[in-house]
Length: 116
Length: 109
Image 1 (tube, one colour):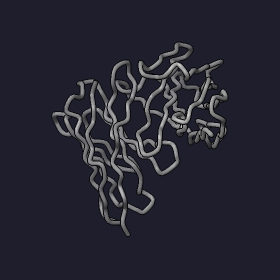
Image 2 (cartoon, helix red, strand yellow):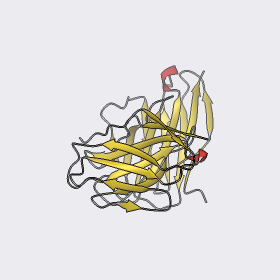
Image 3 (cartoon, chains in turn cyan, blue):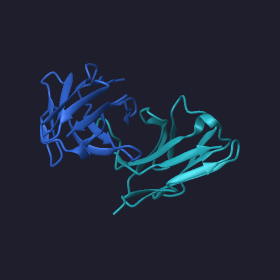
Image 4 (cartoon, one colour):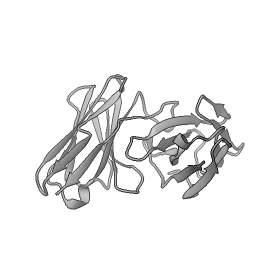
């Protein structure tokens, strides 16, 4: 049973046309993350929510925004997609903070975004 | 912030044990070491994690050196399905996990 669900699996948008990617989770986890993964590169953290507290990475472009209306859902909004934003976008969750706690990340299958 | 160093790629023989090294010489005393793998075009999959002691689960074993500056992930009997990019990850500021470049492991028949 899928626990972190990302829709759609593939998304095509036009240059400059706003696009929203969605993520839902059935784990009731407190933390939700968005990673960007470009071809042949490692996933790069964009931002994350601890409950309703939003935490942006310092180098995440302003073009990327996020919303978390409730515990289960989190959205990634790209206001004006450029060709360089074509990538796999990965959503992940964790019960509590990771790194210095005995917690792990649970990933969705990702949304592959193409920008034409 | 702790960082990890892995070989960019390695091959291993099907049916043999695969030993994947990772250096994390700047790891802090309370930071865990995590291993994930990513099969092409899928989300990363959790394998194992540990703090100080060696760990084993149904997928793999994790050996952490006493000084915690390096670790080895052991896949006991590699199969073709184990071909993937393997990421060794430690935490960094504010309890996030940052991925390094990973190790592309190819299991050869």
